[in-house]
Amino acid sequence: MGIGNIGVSGWIIILVIVILLFGAKKIPELAKGVGKGIKTFRSEMDNDDEPKNAMKIEEKPEEKKAASEANLDETKKA
Image 1 (tube, rainbow, N blue to C red):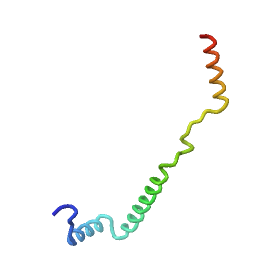
Image 2: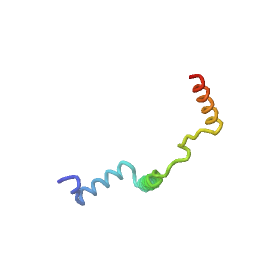
Image 3: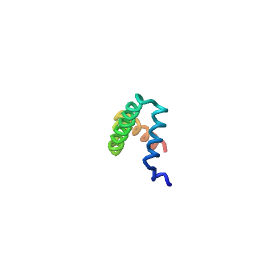
């Protein structure tokens, strides 16, 4: 018998073990947490392809001007 071939008696044993470990009151809370986690994971996977504006590093115009002036000074010296 492989892992994919769990019969009814196997599922009953697994259910009894889960109830003993977590208690009957805790099971709905666990299921809710798992469902919320799956929902969050799916939404993040859908949004993963969009570029993040916060991740982009753009130079300010003043920094570009200063960098270009520094390059001009270096080329004049050479």
